[in-house]
Length: 137
Image 1 (tube, helix red, strand yellow):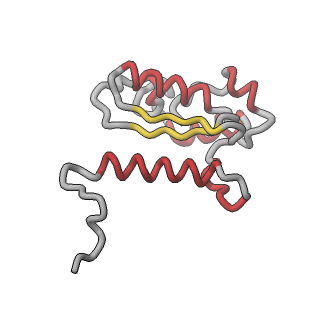
Image 2 (cartoon, helix red, strand yellow):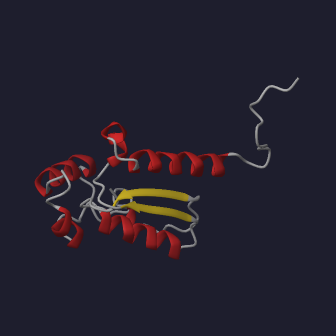
């Protein structure tokens, strides 16, 4: 969730019937999270932040989630700021779809695999050697 001011944008309208996050509950969560802070403050809504200098980002989203519009704006802003980004919107998936690996659809597991691969690639550092965790005789 990257824009605590967005409760009625196009992706909310388009995906309200497929995603489980209703706007009234989102308003409640946003108010609880932001507290007295203006929801336009980049500290609570990073879509409004200067994203230059961020480390590489891996962003996985559901193509049918109500937040997809703001997620796409955030990724576009990060890319425009020179941040290396890896973005995937899994078709027909809802918010936090990765929690549903047990439902028989391969997309949650595929998303988790992309996240794992990305994390390994950006945290490996220069000393990483393929197979380094294997015991050698």
